[in-house]
Each structure stands twice: as structure tokens, then as C-alpha cells.
Image 1 (tube, rainbow, N blue to C red):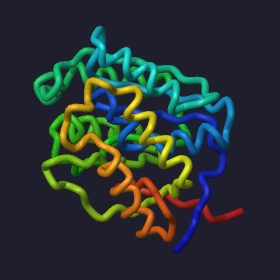
Image 2 (image 1 turned 90 degrees about the horizontal axis):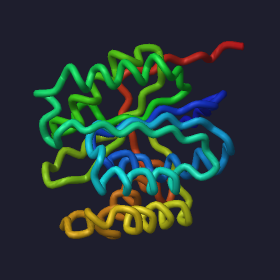
Image 3 (image 1 turned 90 degrees about the vertical axis):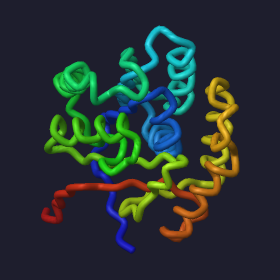
Image 4 (image 1 turned 30 degrees about the horizontal axis):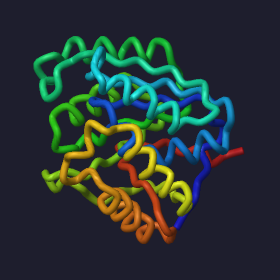
Length: 215
């Protein structure tokens, strides 16, 4: 297995179609990254939930998932499940983010995610952030769309437990969902850990990667 570092990593962009997407898909990675790099800037964008309890949950959650970071979160109010019908608004939000941020790393949904909102946002990210490393996170759901990821971020047992605890603490509106539980989150992390010779891990898809192996 080849391990490549990210080199300079001062600025991160993280996006989600819904409040909790970022935390579920990449919460462990954000915890790992922010704990290792105090002061890293994280520009986060969520397309739905503005003005609701979901936005309040998201702000508290991402503050906890990005300890010590310079976190800047924008939440919009596109209707849940209707991103394709609001394409122009979603594209404008992503383009505004791109104009304000030149990140070293982008965390976004996968382009082959079965949810139309996730998939639509992923396609927008790949066009707006053409010269950046974009990692597509995965979210377990009833669609059964989990694939074969190619990129892994190992998580320490403590970080994996912290992720699950923060998800349970900060998103009370989601606790009634049958898939929103400790077993689901830790189970997937354990499987991804097995795949990269770690106890736990988060996994990502990458559609394009440019190497710089010279001096």
C-alpha cells in the first residue's frame, strides 16, 4: 500500500447538500486534520437547512468537528431533495465559494452517490474546483450505493469513537432514523479500516489525481 502525504495543507473546503452530510462522510477526517494542524482554515458550504434547527445543529457540530480551526460556514436554504430543480442557485453558491477559496483539499460528496442532491453537488464541485484534490466521501443509506473506494484516511479508535459521539450529540433531529446509530457508523469505519490495514478509516473516491513526484 502506498501512503502519500498531502504536503502543504493550510486550507480545506468541505461541502454538503444537507446538514450532517459533511460530518457523516468526513467527520473523522476533519477531526484528524484539525487536531494535527491547529489554525487550519476550513470553508464549509451546506446547500439546505438555513433558518431551521438543522442549521443550528450544523453550526455546533462543525465547530466540534473542526477543533482549533478557522471555520467559516455558509448554509443556504435550497429545498431538501430538489437540487436538480434549483441548479442555478446551487451553482451560484459553489462558484461563490470557489471565488473566495483556493484550498489545498476539497471534501465533497461522491459523483456516483445515489441521492440526487449529493450527486448534483458533486458534479458542480468537479467543474468549479478543476485544479484541486477533490475527495468524494460516502454516506451509508438504504440505496445500497456503497462502492469500492480508492482513498483512505485511517482513524484512531479514539477518533472513531469521538466521531460517533459527536454525531449523536449534535444532530438530535436525526436520531429517529433507523440507519443513524453507532453500529452503522462504526461498522462502516471498521470495514474501511480493514481495507487499509487500520482499525478504522473513512474512505473516499477520487475521479482525477495529479502526482508531483519530482524534486
